[in-house]
Length: 301
Image 1: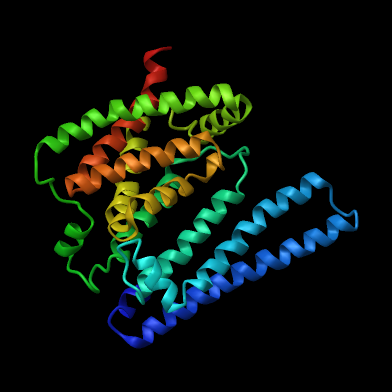
Image 2: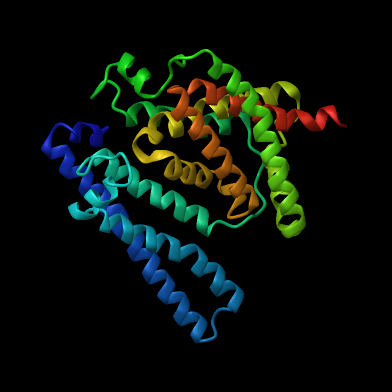
């Protein structure tokens, strides 16, 4: 909200840039100092090689993200990036998005595939509803845009051509084929990693083990993630960057073939958003794919 007010007023703009700069600075400082401390501990024999590698894998991405966030404060860098992406140099909303996006990617790069507690319905809503609110607040509802303008900006309107609904439905089958292909390769190239991803996913979503729950989960994920990523982010960050952030959100997969799968599907959803001019056909594809993946095991029991 502060960043959106900063689009029109100097004081909130400066406060947003300071807040983003402090966040980036703290990330880089903690990452660099933490890496040096672990290096000293490893050199002195206080850490094993495996522990040292794990610590560095976690800290160095945050150090890099923080440094890049500070570098993006430089106007010349913003102008250079604006030649590649449809962003506005000097925008406090974009700057905050860049910093938070870099930290999200850093979290993904530093994540490990590890056991997680089952996700409950309450936790799912507590996790996803803020993302949905973020999409509306991020594009400036009640600040820079009216509710009607916000709906249009997020692409929550019918596509200009009706056939895009059919494309969205056909996309479900295409996505399933792509996912099957990537998972087949993963089972050959990295079977142990793929098994870990499958086991973690099965535990994480173990409470959603009936058709009604699977449909609910698929619909919530589709509405929230498409509104935030393809609706709010893609028009400013482009398909590629948005797909990277979309994949980075799924940290339970760490960096794995499952992450690649989410990234590739994000590219497809981004193309659908760009070509149809609407976020809704992508929601159909996204929800249909998630629901199909969840229901297939019930069909082939």
